[in-house]
Length: 567
Image (cartoon, rainbow, N blue to C red; front, side, top):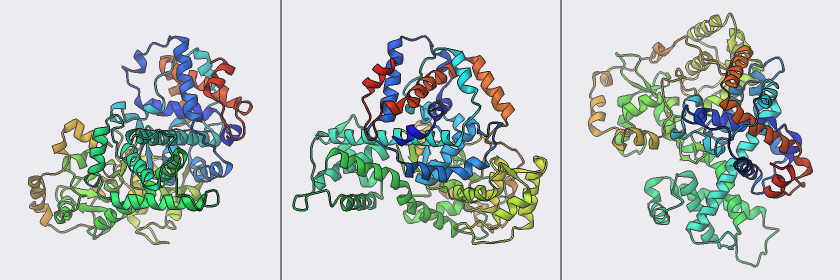
């Protein structure tokens, strides 16, 4: 377990606490009794250790180095405190960016504006199965005195979250075996193994019900209706299986029929989990290209009437109701003359188009702007820069719809100067204003960043549960209303969207003084910090001593860990 030998256990504390932070409510942790039986504490910690170290995952140096290389430019460009460490919001941002860029995942609890996501909306509380009681506030003060998170802490947090999610995938494979009346000890033929994987897809990627076998097989029978691209996805699974068979060809009997053990099925399922978003992104590209064809002036917008017109040919996309689009922040309604318009990158990357959802993350369309931002961070390598430095860097960034180098327009340079003036001559790289400016610089790739609290990222399931399934899609009458409107008959405008520009700033990483104040306030409030710190202390103790407990390729049982360290 190279992870535990080479990285700090401090990130384990953050990894769990930052996922918990967005999901706790006033009637949750503030009403929680911090004095619980020691046996329950031991049980909670034991479960978390088993979950983090379970299923035989071994993190090698190559993977750690790949993570480090991916996040280093982001880390370098974030504001640091006097100890060269980033804040908790900064770390949440890096984790979100890593999984978004590397895997196309939106990890629940690490989303943008995650503080507004409740448990009922699918927050990340499941990663921390329940609130853990604390032992002493003094311990927390000691843990917090480290003052932020180093690069190795970020790497650790990413790996632990990654492990927990892959462990969840293995659990789904186990449930697939049970639903299909197989034991994990059974050796399966190729066709039976594919049946397990198809069940796994329904359970893990399409939010199926593992406790209702009858409903599961109904879903299996109607999978084409639930997920129209199932046939292509099944072919992708076959390709992954072929790759797996090729890699193990020298270890298997060439004269025996192909047989697969549970570990083989779980391995293919894990590969599917890692590759699915990137593979399925072709659907997102097709969707974007269809919208871009109607974006005559490159504003990153299409009229809502034209959006609905595309669904007339039987397309299963472009059917969302105006109210749902408005809730998601997809509609630009800033001009009464032009009428409502769909913002292309906001629509494509919205939760309405997430292809699959698991308990820990959603597999969504890859946000192209993350890659553009990565290029900018790699060039600047600082938390802020002058307007001219940002402009020069952006002029050399190439996107899918903009070939470089290019010269920025006078309007874009003027807007960038406005952002710099707000901050006394410098442009913070991780704030709403630069994200807004990037939207106008790359209108087809970078989503427009709405002010926190003005939009919601509810999935179609969540929105339907809240307001009714009939409100999710536009009715024929609603479509006709927009198709026959005066705005739908008017000309397109190269100035569409310009009136959305505002100078309301929101910084991702607060200055050190604000962070310190926030932590002190939490310490005074007590309950949440005690809860986080107590598990952090236990996790750090175990991770610091794990080298003496874990053999190079073997994890001792949780019972041994608990017994030896008297948890």
